[in-house]
Image (cartoon, rainbow, N blue to C red; front, side):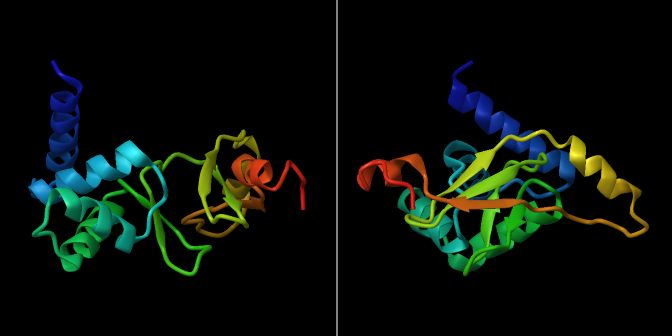
Length: 146
């Protein structure tokens, strides 16, 4: 089986299992998020996916993202001027470059999160952002840390 066929079947199964209607737009948006993992805004998703699907509307992008979020296929990153979306819903942190704005996933031990489950409140989400300068921007700046 070709990887693209496997991915298509994976997305179809994800959507069907959650009870969501399988549409070419939903499959393409899932494929985009899964392939690039660049924590895009809805506008970025729209611009990039529209190249492959010229009839795609912004409304469809927003509605699809909301449906994917409601079914825990994506999480919303809120520490930015615009909402960004992450297909990696497992507990992890994000490194945000203050120079270029890129967002990187960081796998850090989540054992400290066990303490959160012991508080007398209902925790619905935990987000961790680490801000600094990425290695690409440091290289452009001559390796100088600011």
